[in-house]
Image 1 (tube, one colour):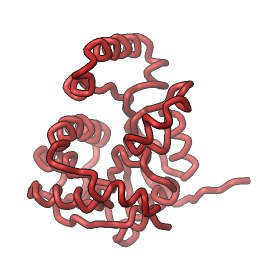
Image 2 (cartoon, rainbow, N blue to C red):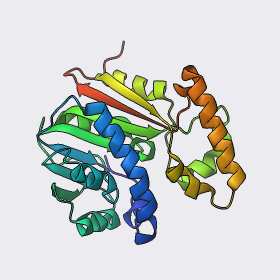
Image 3 (tube, rainbow, N blue to C red):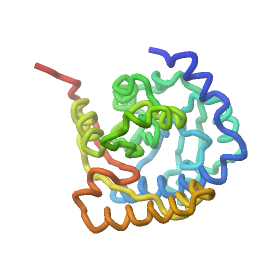
Image 4 (tube, rainbow, N blue to C red):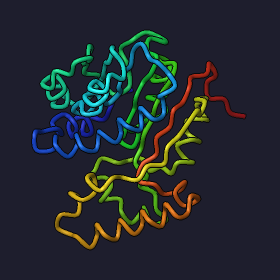
Length: 243
């Protein structure tokens, strides 16, 4: 299985210095979710699949999350920026094909896959590789779902989002591949993450703040439409089985 050439080309030069500051801010909260989900577990080694430009790993290294961090990434520009950061606890930094993870079975205590699955053409193939090489997994995805998401195809494709999730749909996907759900977080983006997105539309920012207030008032709604959803899973030895 290979990434389509047009998709590979789109990501190969995606990362540049102009985007680093905002990505680093967002990565801080993604890293916090990782720590919160797994604070009761010690990992001897960790792999991030789809590490982007390395901001999540940089935060985790600063916080001494694990002494043996590693990553695989499909983007050559991303790899270059990761290496330029000289992240203290980061060892392997590998370019990969998007599906085949170049490590043996059960090699890692934890695999992190944060804001990646929404970009993946064949997500179950990648999930099975992640499961193969790891004991625990942490996944985070943006929750782009709405009842009219089909009216926003061009918008989400412009972000590279080709898969749309709710928390329940992600859990279904993971459980059908026999990942065991251990703990989860429904996450709302902090002001410092969302405000730059509305620098030319202040009213849009305040409308988002109102939406967040309503979601916090009604936990049921939060479970359907947070900004992002993060989940800790554990490997089982079962494969997908139907009928």
